[in-house]
Amino acid sequence: MSKIIWQIRDGIRDFLKNFINVRLIVFIVLQIFIMHVYLYPIKKFALSASYPVSTWVLPFLMKDIYFRFFFIAGVMYFYSKIPFMQSDQIYQIIRRGRIKWALGKIIGIILSGFFLMLLEVFLSAIVLLPSVMLEAGWGKVLYTLALTDACEKYHIKLDFSYKIMDSYTPFQGLGVLILVGGFVLSFIGLFMFAVSLYISRLCAVVAAMFFAVFSIMAANISYIVYWIELISPISWMDINVLFGNGNEPTVKCVIAVMVIVISILTGLILIKIRKIDFCWNKEE
Amino acid sequence: MKEGQTIQVIENENGIIKVLHARKSFKDVRVLNDVNISCNKGEICGIIGRNGSGKTVLFKAICGFLKLDEGSIWVEGKEMQKDIDMLTTAGIIIEEPSFLSTRSGMKNLEFLYMIQNKKNREHLCNIMKLVGLNPSSKKRVGNYSMGMKQRLAIAQAIMEEQQILILDEPMNGLDNEGVEDMRNLFLDLKKQGKTILLATHNMDDINLLCDKVYEIDGGIVRQLK
Image (tube, rainbow over all chains, first blue to last red; front, side, top):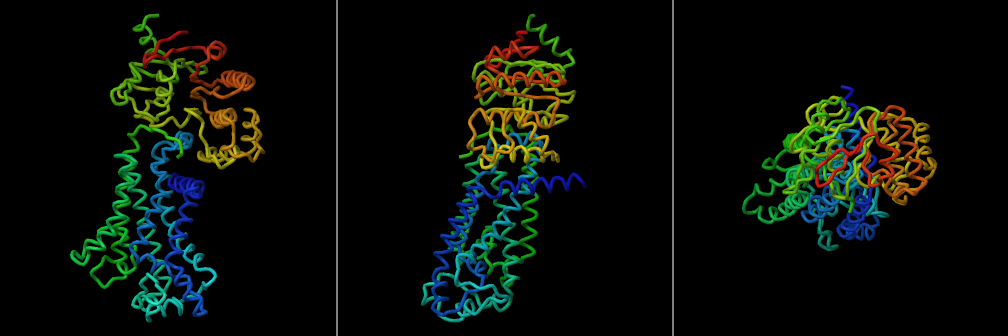
């Protein structure tokens, strides 16, 4: 038991030491830019209505397939240190051993996934400044955008679903999005880790990019083959899919699938890490 | 001593580090070719060889970073890759020293020290002073000179007071004074009973420090001393 606690503490310590880096700063800058493109018209609308927007726009941002694509591309950039073969790891591996080092990195990837989702919530509120307000409900502005033709008038590209606002509180919406999103990002990170170990780092990036591109392709042809959109885990970050009307996988189902897939990937990584030759490269 | 006799002696020796019939290739290039070495407790064993002769590959294999194609490595009676998968009980310097570049030397040492659940700032300050670095300096490692990085690498290798040290060209980048300091430090560590495996280009290091010397060339090792 104490070994497990040590492992978790070590993973958290390693994560805290490494989470804030140049990649994170680039990710934040890119996200702020993309969010600004999407949210500026809403801000304009809020200013003209003289009423602030609530901080809960992220679930609706994530409904947009192109926004999701740019978000995932940013996450992949953040994860591009995977499989952590930078030479500054030498002194850490020799102290931890292969398995403990890999477990630490796996814990770090999972924690990063959830922290990136939380960061995304925070950034979406920052971008709306100064026309933003913290409130318990979805807020008048979002309701107005859902119920009127204001989106069209102000060239707002997001789809605000009244059905979702009516059925779920912002905390439910965001909570589920952070939970599922955290698992999806963890999956992407671990998938990249496993593919880099078994094949190559380049293949890992290409394969992860495929998921992101596939979600756009699938969304465009989903009117022909309905289920195709649901294959890509990235589509599961769409609140419409999560709170669908029965044909889509339920939140419980999505989380169960993610936990199983993450466990399998963890197993595959641990099997491979015992056998590989470590080849270091300098941080690029 | 003839080669066959050397191998026989190594197999029978009670070395704290023993490499037996080690072979390692990368694609079609054989880097280690039936390498046999043995290092006894409290000895400094030197390995000399040109660039690309296989010294670093041998050291990486001893540490557990690389798997041998054939042969075995024994450290303190445990077989690498069977009983242990990494030499977590050794202080090492492999390749060019590399640290978290945005943090100070002291912070780097604290982070590495904490991995094995240890925390003793005073001890780390003493270690930094021992290698000639200022423990209270806030200078980021990214701004360190090569010599300072090398000193920090030596500090991280010795800070846990491990009984085995595997040092791949630890004098690289050091000025004459630094080389002299480090030679004295290694001799002190030897007096404390530590076993040091040392790769170097410098014959003075070999003559002054080493009890046993192996030369590696084209992946083949022969004992010189």
